[in-house]
Image (tube, rainbow, N blue to C red):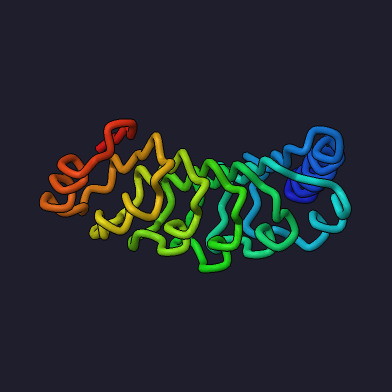
Length: 176
């Protein structure tokens, strides 16, 4: 019985947050115990502009690609503390995105799609398992980046860390 009550509370919480997003433009689905984004979420906020999204602290294993299509004007995405292994290429079409927090997921490869986000100023990939980064491409592709957090990527090669520091633009705050 308690599982049914808990599930019911979870659904109610998601519905209430979708309703609030219609007014604020901020879809906050953090800590909702989500394993995926149900189509009902998109239906509940259809025809409303959503510019900020938080799906942090859930149990998602796959990036919800529909976020990009359904909320094309998003400027901030917080997807920290999930179990997402990759950021798909669809993200590259999110031209308004300025902030991306993908910390504490299961990402092992630096996401190429992120390099297409020309307006990105904040990128947090800490606590993943990234080993390799094309530093030259990173810095040339994201000239507006002012904060980059790569700490906690324990397998990030030392030569990559050194190159990140050596070629770092002056205005960039780099956290290793």
